[in-house]
Length: 408
Image 1 (cartoon, rainbow, N blue to C red):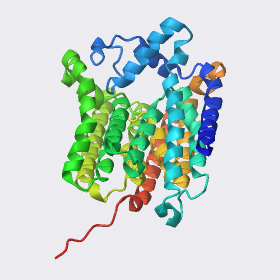
Image 2 (image 1 turned 30 degrees about the vertical axis):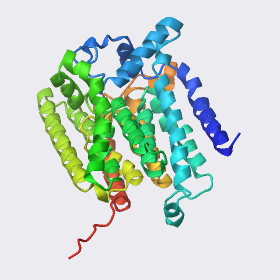
Image 3 (image 1 turned 180 degrees about the vertical axis):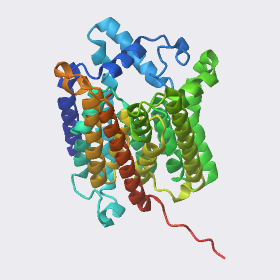
Image 4 (image 1 turned 180 degrees about the horizontal axis):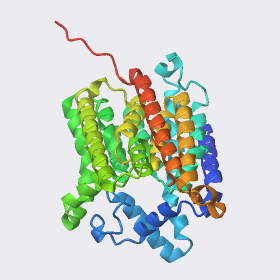
């Protein structure tokens, strides 16, 4: 067995050893109920059904996976709560292996060897990066405790970057586009990273071709539901989403509820924040597309994820994994800083609002709806949001290439 095969086997064992016993726990009641309902849902009205409202707002691939697992559970038996968390465990395993491939290759490049400061340069960098996710308590709590499969989308993002930067196959660009399309099909937020991938090409024709390869499978997948449920219903579910669980949106909601403000006033403030956040994201995406040739790809992925966490109006708990997992590929110190703050925030959320995700049968009554705890939660989210902006600003010089001067 080769050294690479032994390392990958070790990563698989580490990831499964941490998560396997945890699969027997009940997990977050609210998240498990949502996943089980989606697994039993008839997809004919996926975007108009009351059952899916507030529970699903992505492209159909995620639901198709859950539906398939629900069908297997009806044939094989077992607890559906365990079945619906298998994609999350598979995603953690896939991301550990993707980190190994990307970091192992980057650590041998001349740029990495000449880099100073926070960069992977160890001979076993790939193994260390993979273990950084496989044995990460934040990753395990999100995947097994909350059933989040976003790590699968993160793995596909890194795989697409690997194809573009290090792939030697003549069809590497096609494989990269399909990997990015699969990531977007699982969770729509990776679409914000498209300008980073377009920056890997030198001509407009190449960028248009890559975009077409990426969008075509997504259009074909969504087409039956566009006809059945209507494009407007799909767009509304994808844009609105549930109430934010983190960041400025969560701080706003907690502050209003703690002050016992009128519900209509909170809805107006939340709508203003959603419009402002989406507007800023559209503006940032436009700048990224315009200046895509100045963006570094792999270094830019955690930077784009940090910006999403700062501006995305409806931010789920699973978003804590986005910048940390992507930062493991380029910056171990940044990843550990994000991991520690993210784990503290997730533990605080579960202790206040969802203790069963932490303690299972030994859980206590949630106390987060009391005014004092709500104000504390609002303050913590505001402080966390400010720390994200600091990390984003510090990372920017590593992402942007110098402006090329035009010859006179």
